[in-house]
Image (cartoon, rainbow over all chains, first blue to last red; front, side, top):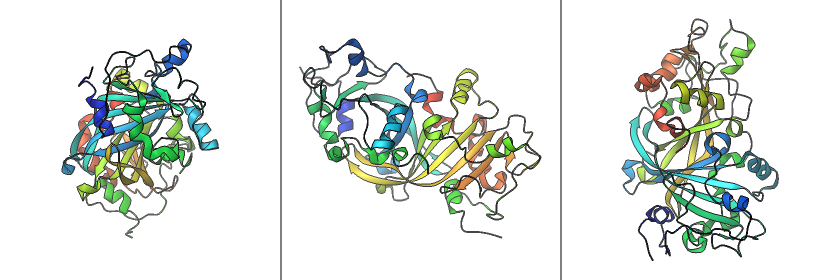
Length: 191
Length: 191
């Protein structure tokens, strides 16, 4: 079964992706409840309690219109601390990417785009040992991967990270599959 | 004395501004040390300890090149809580706007711009009663105002907020002189 509900994820990847369906997936059935919960949008108010790593501004297909999306990425404070010491994200790190549609205005600074409607959220959970990879197609290559549309926090539309997510992250493989170049606070705690 | 060191602030305002000079200013001489310190870049690691309110993406003069700057704004967690209850920033709120030059790459999502070099920081400190306005030209209209170039945290290049800052914020007067439309977390604690 194919679905057209997955335009958000497809749009974000910018590549052809194939989805089996939008049904809710048993994500990590062999793992304890705590681990399964971790690959949903966290219940903690991460926008005020966690750390914003950085933002990506995605240019409109009509460039004069400014940015068509803003992507804002968050993680736990302890993951930032660990990264600054070790250069890698520790096991259990959760990356949440808020994907916003924008509004663009001509402000006194110039043509400015800012976050408007939440399109959805990508969630990645670090699994260094790949121990979850054998129990769910949402886990592999050292991470769990899932996209949640709009305000949804529990039911992912992702069915297999290889088709739905990985191709977009391959260019960042030598950075642990994460676009860390957009995260200034990982370069230095203080500038 | 005029200086050409102030291109950062002038560029950001996008309007003609006049500066007296770049010398260090006695900011609030009649106030206790604590108050003077507050109109510098805070010593706290605000990027990991405070809350990121939102980002503005500023389009390049050659739009095909993506965003030329990203502005990322932070404040104290307690100011966010108060704003969500009252709709205004409480006295003592500090707004810090990191102004970054960008790098732009064609990523799998499309043409994406992200923070690169820190150009400087704007600091605003809420002074509801305007009690500081009589002691320094950096205070007035309910705020303290200062810009710090590059990695500088102590010596502002701002000499008078009316000429250096206010004209850029006038369009937001009915929002307390702040561009709150770019701050999604102030619309709702949870979306």
